[in-house]
Amino acid sequence: PGPPSATLSSVVYVGPANAAASTNWQVAAILRNTNGIGLVGGGADVTATVSFPGLSLPTPVVTDHANGTYSAAFSYTRSGTYSVSMLLSGTVIASTLAINVIPGAVNPATSSAVPATLATAGVVSSF
Image (tube, rainbow, N blue to C red; front, side, top):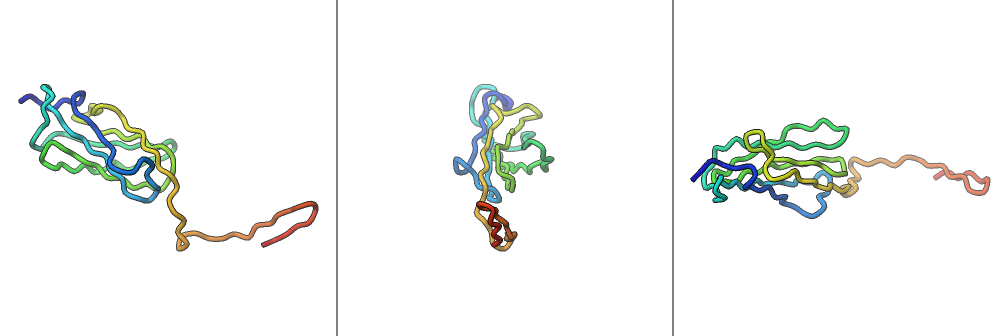
C-alpha cells in the first residue's frame, strides 16, 4: 500500500467559518499513502502546532482514530487569526490553516463595569 504521504494527505477545519473565542474547535488530518489511497489504520507520527502572534501556546493533543484520521481540538480566548498545522513525522501535512477566532459572548460572571467620565461642551458628567 505504501507509507503515509504528507503531500497527498489533507487537513480540514471542523467548525464554523469564524470560531468564537472560548469555544472548542477542531482540525482533522486525513492520511493517504504515497499512491494517494486513504489509510485505514492508525499509528502514524502525527502532531499539531498552533501559533498566535505574541502568545506562547501549549502543544495540542492529537487523537489517533485508528482509521487513517487524526484530530486535534483547541479552545483559545484571544480573538484574531491562529495558524494551525498538523505534521506527519515533522512535515506539514498539505498546508497550514489560518483560523479566524472572533470575540465570544459577554459573560456577566467574568465582566465588570468601571465608572466613566465624559466631558461635553465643558460639562463633566459621571455615570
